Image (tube, rainbow, N blue to C red; front, side, top):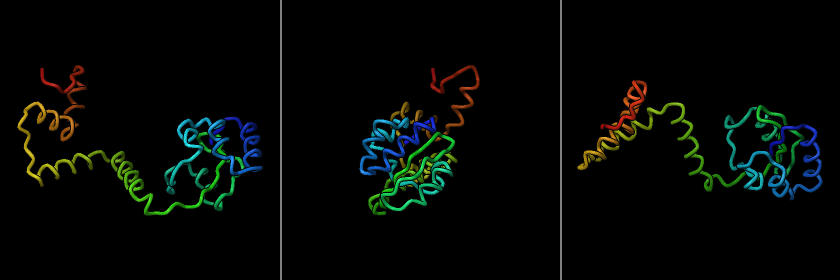
Length: 159
């Protein structure tokens, strides 16, 4: 749950501490983080290095079911409730996807190279020239689009 104002966050923290089982209900009503509010305050499996360092420091100190004091981070004020760690196997696919997303965001060329390798390995050939052009320009050579976009606003599509 995120609250920008510390006083309001402290009031909410007291309410949650009285009955931690109502955390989700309170998060849905009070949290400014609309994404987690919709999911009763659930963030899912949090990896170290994935969120704000002050948030993580507080989160990883908590025992199962325990509620934190008000935690200030770069995003605002939080009240954190630790859930028991989920079974790793049930979270494995989601974690893989998060890690791949993080790697691709840091180095988009990884995705382009993977596409190129797969197309080569399976000897993919596009019969339709328009599809081939789109795949080559937008997926395999995104630098070409950036260059075209910088020169008079061309979209990379042939006219």
